[in-house]
Length: 306
Image (cartoon, rainbow, N blue to C red; front, side):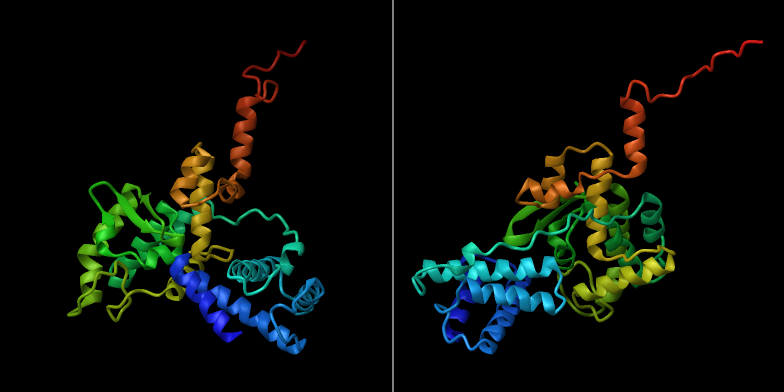
């Protein structure tokens, strides 16, 4: 089983060109499944049937695993078994008959414009770290980048003449992201002032650096956001992806076309972008008052009779 597993991981990395994070998650989910099989004393991959998979779902539910995580684990197992069938290692795919749990539809969390402005103004621009943090916060909100895309940016991917960012997204697919002038200005200031001080005597092409002059890791970006959310008094959990949610929500609230937002986010399927088609209460009220023929307030009230 170990040899087959190693070959499958190589298949993900080389043939499917999966991202580091996808490979990492698939590894963890499959190893968890193999651990369960050992407990069940399943002696071969061929011996896994529908009942074993149902038992695995029950096991995950009793462990308190949420539906979204269960669905992700099943997706990893489903992909693995399709590979086994394609390579003729097994003759039939038992998981094809097992459905993923129906996920609860939840609207993505996002920040209001006031919360965004407070967050962007939180860094101390008198320090190199503050200059860096202002630039990365501006870019996350202005471009809708994934945090993995942000931290992997190199200097040659930024064009400050056109305010464009060449991004390598999921599956190593290239796209062009955009940023507005405030984000570009914050980035210019960081490149001129903050980055040289963080880099010191070292050399490197990474755009965002830590205090040691090395590429800023994802987890540090998470802590940066938590720090500034607390400082600016935002009473909700703020993480890098919430700025991506906010980017998409504010664009659509402003009248952007759904397919344009899909392109900017780097979504392969339009259905992935459609979760952002909710609107804020204020925008819903504005559209309603503008569109409904009997919703508008009358300019002049009728005079009351004496």
